[in-house]
Amino acid sequence: MSALVLGLAALLGATPTAPAARPAAQSAPAAPAASTGTTRTADLTSAAEPAASAASASDALAAPPRFRERLDLSHLFTVDSLTARHLSFSDLRLGAEAQRLFDVPLGVVIDGRARHSWNALADDRTTLTEGYLRYGDDTDAWRLRLGRQLIRAVASAEVDGASLEHQWSPATSAVAFAGLLPNPWDMSFNPDFITAGVGLENKNVNDSQSGGLVLCTYRQALDRAYATHRALYTYGQTLTASSFTTVDFLSREPLAALGSKTGLDLTSFNGLVRLRPARAFDTSLAVTHNHTLLPNRWWDYYISEEQKRHGFVIDGLEPVGTRLSSVRWTNTLSLGPAFAPYVRLRYDMRHNQKATGSEARAGLKWRPAFGYVNVAVAYRDYFGVPSRLGEATFGIEQPHFGVEGGLTVLALQVRNQAGWKTSYNPYGMTWFDLGAWSPTLAHLRLLGEYQGFLEPTETTHAFFVQLAHRL
Image 1 (cartoon, rainbow, N blue to C red):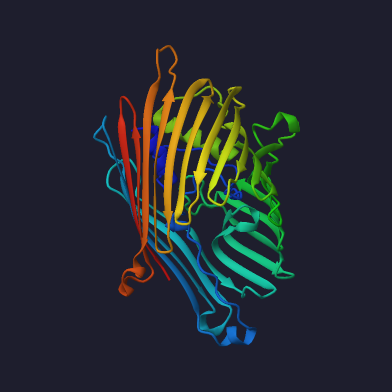
Image 2 (cartoon, rainbow, N blue to C red; image 1 turned 90 degrees about the vertical axis):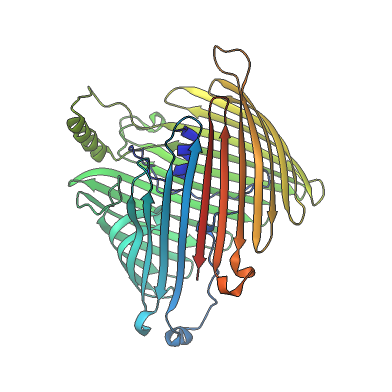
């Protein structure tokens, strides 16, 4: 099975059959998008829900329970030209939120997914992302949550336990939490993992900040301690800056610049500065650094158990982290309301292999009222492998439907071989708001997506379809 297909499956939520490295941070912020490149329509699974209208406290007490629901049924299927093994699985995802049950500030939140695999390439699995009771309205000074939850002020840290939040004002709040940590392998409840932490969040019109400190233990021994910080600053349309940082204090592979004997490690950093000094010119600089980690003591235990099960021994533990840094500089010039040529330079470094890569890209984007068309060419040095890239994409964006498509052509200069190896990656996506076509289908949306990987020795096709209901 092509590695590209497995990567697509992971992007769509597939569960690999072999253990994968767990990111140091649960999530990273989505940096404000630059005005260049292709912007695909958002996946229906992440579509934002309309905000409820504000009401007075007396109206809220008299109002019936508020309820929001999401139900997604999706299927992923792949075919390739080399094997008879096709990735095929179906997902059912349910999300529901109810507030002011029994006319008291009591609510419940559930978000889970059940998967059925139609062959052995993926596992059947039921995963509970969130499931908790909440006491306290959004405007109350104190709020208590019991159950599995994500602490979003601290990079969506996971906990099976309790959290207590205090709100000083609509903009400022603090949270403390403690409980079990879901098993890093299968998200099951496991008393071997315990976590606790505190977080602080402050949101204003032009800036927002959040972060905190988290401690994790494995079998009563401290396994991980880390701090997170997220910030966003906006000064009109002229300047936008955002960052997300995670620092570990007990890393087995600390960052040398922070002192190799201290255990300090910059495990995640995403920073973006976007400057628009004139209406016709836009420039942005993005810097990222990521060190993929696995929980230290748990990882050692997992390796030893796997060795016993398979009947072999490894002398010493190899490093399990991959450290990658990247810098991207994008410049866009607007020629009137519709045309925007752009240039993007990128530099990458793999610290473990001491390898570097780079890319220079130039493109032109046409932005009519109904959508966009983007064409680009690039030269890339992919860590020692020269390549040339050509790309053409388009999109039609309407209130009740959208269509996107494109083709990427990649030519690689293979080592010790003459000529170039060319591959083609076609892409297509469409979505429909079925309620716009028939009132009986209100709140239903249909999404279809195709991704192809056409190489000289192998062709792979991936199909994804999703039926989504929102209430």
